[in-house]
Length: 286
Image (cartoon, rainbow, N blue to C red):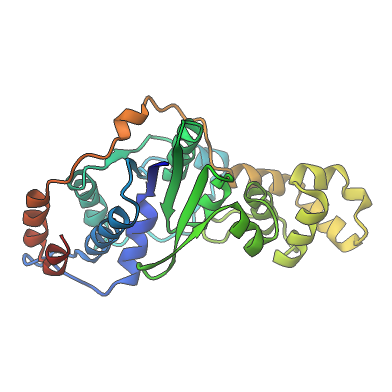
């Protein structure tokens, strides 16, 4: 099987920035996130040897989710001044590795990944692997077609999720992760969910009814009156939360599979790039 590897660039860069100690270039510029990203890419290319690759980025403009809910991610602090130039330099890193960068105004990196996975998952002899530090992407898993390799701790340990492993860990299907988050909310994205119902109650509802829509179709029959009350009071919030949590799979992208073909790495160019940044250990790994 050939491999299409889709990289959630923003989640990896943020993870590297916060997980690694401060590092600077010989010129004194902060560079720890770029070091971590470069190290991850060397490992990913060695482990997977992908035939096709893309790196999806967020953009600075508001997205359709911000239009839908003004408080979406509103509580997040501004991006650290030491991270901003590294986010910009990350584009150059992917270029050096021969990986196509994709972004679209109005959408998040997850939406680009979801759309690319949907576009190419049914191609002959293709496995789609999503590499991310964000559990939101687990909703995109499809049995024998789409897999998610998730950073587990720090920037070195990962776990590969297929549908079976996801069901073992979560107790429902990958697609139902959206419904689960619609109920419990998501503090990191400021998705409100249903006030008063936590993970245990949400899991019971998903197992019994399957989806937010089915839950509300039969809300009057739910035996626990307190759960009924919480659901009724947060009806609008639950459906809004499901929309916010759903990764889009149909954004307009004019990209062919051939456009994502992994280019041969110019090792000499990459060596010079690493040396300029002071990445001597990565030069040795080349």
